[in-house]
Image (cartoon, rainbow, N blue to C red; front, side):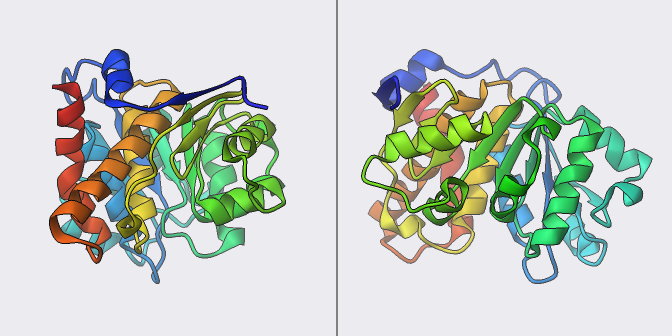
Length: 278
């Protein structure tokens, strides 16, 4: 059972605070690894979300066939065309991975085997802080945990959480998320609940039903990675990311109703953070 379950409020987040913004370099660098010809936009949503919560720099490591268009779509990002395995890691991408303050892997991937190869390749570089999302969670149980960094963050929806547990979620979500955290020695976010491997749990209101739209999870994972890159502890990055994503959805639902797009969330993210910090 979890040791504690603490409700997430603005007051709590204000007490935690955020690191001084400082310079662009001080705010951290996020590398988003993912994308496919079928889902090239997922990495863009994640990368922009990371910048919107205050990350200083962002890079995209994506398949060569989609790389050219992404540079035009997001001029703020560095784009690395990557074949997805260790052999095709060139010096430029390897240096970027080594220097990353947070690496997000999963958005836009659509093949389990390719995802596993990519995960093992980036882990072999020696990444310090890793955020896993989407297809990366479907293969995580087949990966030796010792090969991954100590600072591991998992952003799971309910279906992905069930895969990680090996069973459906029960009525005690806090206990289930804490079990995933223990099993994978990670900070875990699932539908407003965040747990650590030590059994501490935070619970926030999960946000409006409008968040159940294509690409919303990519924005969420980008928020988490952005806060992680700024130097927050993994569990605090997950709490801040989940809160920011949920409240952005609430603001949109109140203003326009259900039917907004995931990319509409990006215009709310910075304002939500400001509302807490100011």
